Length: 277
Image 1 (cartoon, helix red, strand yellow):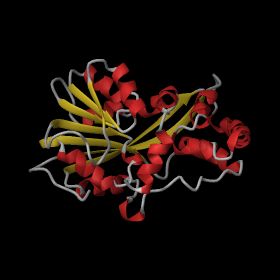
Image 2: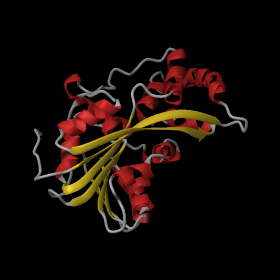
Image 3: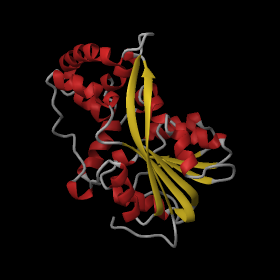
Image 4: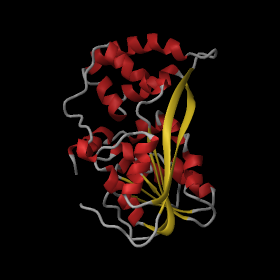
């Protein structure tokens, strides 16, 4: 694993329940479009990679698909098992998933590429386990993001918080532009054909305290930033956050936070393509 992969394991260790209570609903928004892009319907053999709290798995089961799921975090595996009883949910990480070549008609990964140190190898692995003629579909967060995506980071910056030194970034030689063009080029380079990408924009409606609860609980990299200086730093960032929330306030007291994600899909052709481990 790269330093980024090790950092991600540390970030998410033991945080499945906190994620389910906070950011999971945000990440569930693109699920219908993701499953549509992968052609998931009745009888489709589909794998949900990075299943998290199970939103993709549950939706695919609801379409009548034959669903399996996998995640690198044991707590996420258990959460998906609870959400989708009877589904085969395994522990595994990209790029070494515990499945055979060409085992699935479709493979989907919802906001998973944001959490791997070698994105092209990750796509190659998804391609490996998809049958010829099958589809791979993924979502990622766009960079630069929309204003709602930057709210907590702005609060942390205003409070003088700095990124922890142990919090790694993707090595430059493995990174890619988080744009439609960059995602499309990545998927093509990994051997997928007929690659198509699109932007998905929406307002995430959420209570101010509910939105703060995720970072305050240490969820995701932003949560590590917010907690980087202990309770004093969290309190300082919260004061700044309360002020900045006014920009997104709705009449009912909640927030409308603009977000933009990218959706990419590509088709598999020929046999599996190996990649450097």
